[in-house]
Image 1 (cartoon, rainbow, N blue to C red):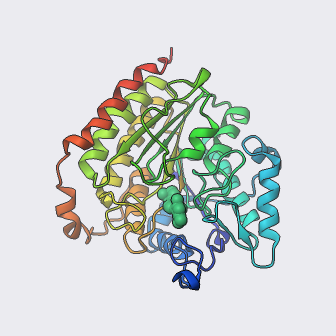
Image 2: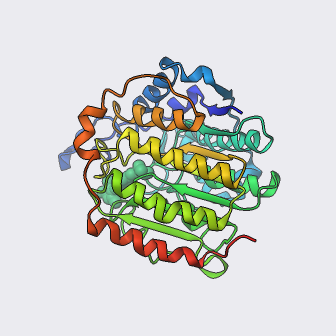
Image 3: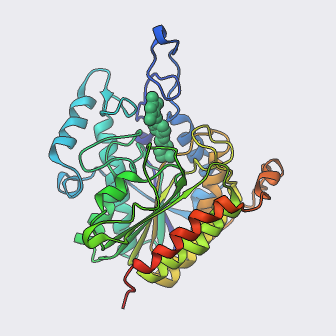
Length: 373
Ligand code: 9RB
Ligand code: ZN
């Protein structure tokens, strides 16, 4: 069965405005105007490569729709939704709250199109029209909490889709795997006390948000044990991420036995990313995806649905995303990986003891997940 692909030109019209990379311009502080690191260029280049490689022909295009208010309010407070709308209605947009989450004019509806696009994709997967899928949505979502925007994220796209799957599609147990290099704090917070949603975040330790994603953040109340974090030290690469997959992610998924796996597909752990210091290559993403596709096949009829999150190197991220999507679709474009030689040295870096430690500690926490009967 085929792989679904969600894209819409409006995802490229989410206007992150004028910034000096991350910072709002402030000439008196020596911060000149420039482009925001989360601009549309990388997203457009991903879509272009999916098209130009021929892979698009193998995918089932799924037209996104805006998330309904009912869908949004399963996750977000009405105050939060109204706040984003009000910022978005201003002639030149605004900021969603933390000073680093630009809201372009009209971005409210684009964020709803992101949440609704993933929700539609999950629906088509549940209905059996496609086995799995990828939504190349903008803006991203994994930092957004019930009542706060953060770190470029307005609405928590994955959380909205997860709640929809549970309440409407008859998929009660959801696992969310977040491989974005930053901690999936918003998703974790939304489901922190909920044992029906297992969140697993692999991220660079002490990166973003500050003081977030430690091993001790392991869920609370009824959800104790159902939030897993693998904070990997800066400099972790291919060996570390695959070890984390084998020691933590796959055993946790097997024990939890989800009905659906959602993937926060950030590509900002790539070796050339400006917003972190990890060393993944396109082939790492390929291998991690293969493992997740296999897990979804054995656990939940192949139901693996990904939403795009971060990834900021405009020339390498598209190749990481293509490798990921080829594996998801179980096909190959036969394009040579011309970057493989460039990254060979990084890819060969061995797993170091200080990288192994957090993986081993996280692996011990899996026992807290009640095995599915
Ligand atoms: C600034 C701060 C950031 C840093 C990283 C991201 C990454 C988002 C992403 C977003 C905002 C802090 C500029 C803290 O890719 N998520 O997946 N902002 N960081 N203080 N200041 C002044
Ligand atoms: Zn990120």
